[in-house]
Image (cartoon, rainbow, N blue to C red):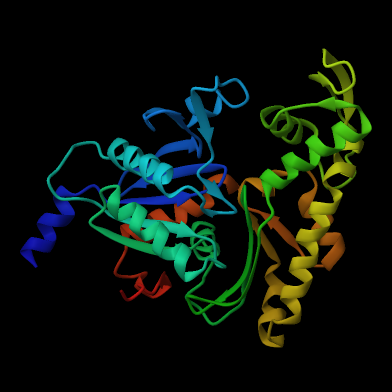
Length: 345
């Protein structure tokens, strides 16, 4: 008991929302200490780490051949094991205020549809990066805890967490996911939709950073009271020269429509698998939207119109998952039943 107390005192336990677009780190008893894009820049010749996070993201589309700018996570899971380990090692070291001898315990959020192989990859990466103990938790559960939903009670809570690579939809009751759907589309897919649309309709080629900015500025899922427009700079596909075009929110809404409909269809399919008693609870409380994608203008109204249920966007939806995982880390014994069971070797 004394040794456990010393462990808790000397270690800087952390929780990580390992996202396709952004990675957030929570340090026990302190709060969110890191919020960075999940981007890494390494040298081509010797895999030397050059930059991580925002510094690396700023290099996207501007890097020379000698430098590779990588998004090591795809669809919410590890696509490049070695680079993810480099990123995690850097984040774990930066998150610890002091370098104690005792390695930290780490809680990592993962998609609900993750495979056993992908679970092992996440756990092994965190262990190799310096964690002494790794616990995994499903993103919808962490989001529900971060949104202060009563997940311990025998009542249905429907959470829709829209991240960069995945959209997680789950009905949670008695601290467990009863039914869930994990579709591998999210904010990154929306960016690609915008790139493709502008290329076909306006003969202009833009990069992912520009597409992301368009999405944030004028992107919407439902008609706006006052439609928006903005000037977009890119490369003319025909001449190859830089050009500027005006793009409207109506155009971007058309570009995003297919992805938005896919998300709505996933919600409808989930209800087909949901028990009537849980569906009745959800009818009373509505659908909870979290994640960066929840900030798309009018998405709540579009979803509400499609399923005829109340839809609530959680304030600070971007940090909802890491808030929940941080609460789990702060009270690990109380939340052990929500953790994903360890894989036996």
